[in-house]
Amino acid sequence: MAFDHSMSDPYDSVGALRNKTSESWDGKPSELDTEIQKEDSAFMSSYKTAAQEGDPSVAVVLAGEGVGEIDAIEPAYDIIQRIDEEAQQVIQSMSSILGETAKRKRN
Image 1 (tube, rainbow, N blue to C red):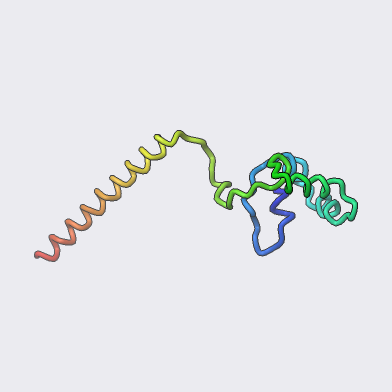
Image 2 (image 1 turned 180 degrees about the vertical axis):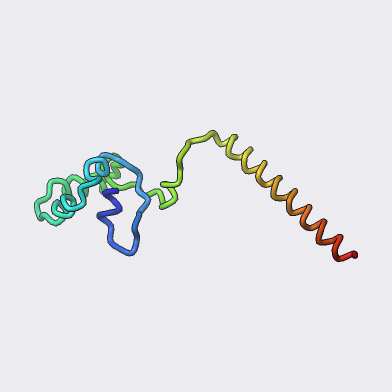
């Protein structure tokens, strides 16, 4: 992603949301480097203005590296219900493990 390329090491990814800037510069790392280095860059001037004004359609919006792991938008109810079901399964499996351990100790 363009924002990842423009950031310095040690990070490979900044977890930025896509916007007009990323759409314009993705796949053009050398062109982006050239544009960033220009003293009179119209892009950098407009980018700095957008960043100062908080315009998310142009300036980077950091969302964390995990944002790339999101592949679906689900209702909160469904997520909570899934977490509850998974927790119940873990508790049941732990109960059976603990029950077996207790039986072995008695024998």
